Image 1: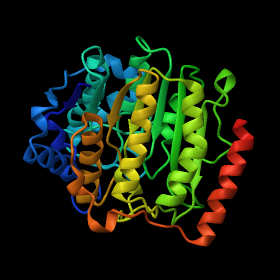
Image 2: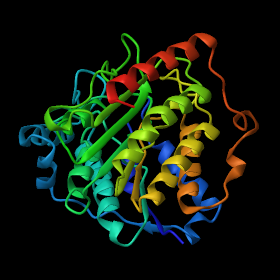
Image 3: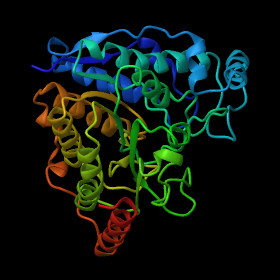
Image 4: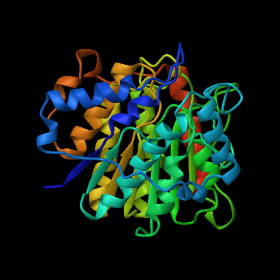
Length: 347
């Protein structure tokens, strides 16, 4: 029996931007409710995050930036970046507790096989700036801390947006395989994540970007994943897999134009889960983006159920029982991208 922990604090819900901003903590509260209603916490342990010391943030962020966030948090006005991430009173504390959740998820892996922090996944935050609704980069920080115990860490990011902050912070890290599948086209945020971005220095080849065109459905998403991500994971043989499970690759998401169904998401998580067991690797999973709140909550719930081997098949709604097909144009584009990536990465 593989033990799974769910890291949670009600303070997570305070990280929710005001007005008509798309990032709302309703996603997290819905996912927790779905799990509670189905008795999941009889099999999954609820773990409260231990608040980290601020000094730990300096592993991935500039001291001046942390002080800036604290000041804007006290003021409760303006923006932490160029206009995507508004400040509100208490944003520092609510960002810190969510970051603490990911650190806790890493630190409890001596007791658990899988740990989940749906309150994490802020992969756009950079060394000295916020970006894309993300204040502190819990992903990069969690991985840096994990390196104290794990030698080979694979990050698999299936958020609809490229994790530019995490890529920058880990670009020359030779202990980490960084795989990202995301939508990519001119003018789409954050503008990075092209196939040629493969890492720096001795870590060249350990950054694997799989840029997908709008309209990519289950068929071609899974094709790209199986042709590129799977062989990279298999050859790397990780002892820890970090999954960033952004819900905005779902076909209902209002900000991203990828077309994954619940079934598509579940198949990806199953495949990663199988690979992790093959190499006796632990799994940490965070949330990420996701702006259709119910769809995102269901994706997370299904993914957690897969890790804990619970039956939540009721969440595979009729429309999601079959894969969503890509158009012929998209199929051709994805095949071209995959062939290009095979050449770049010697697959």
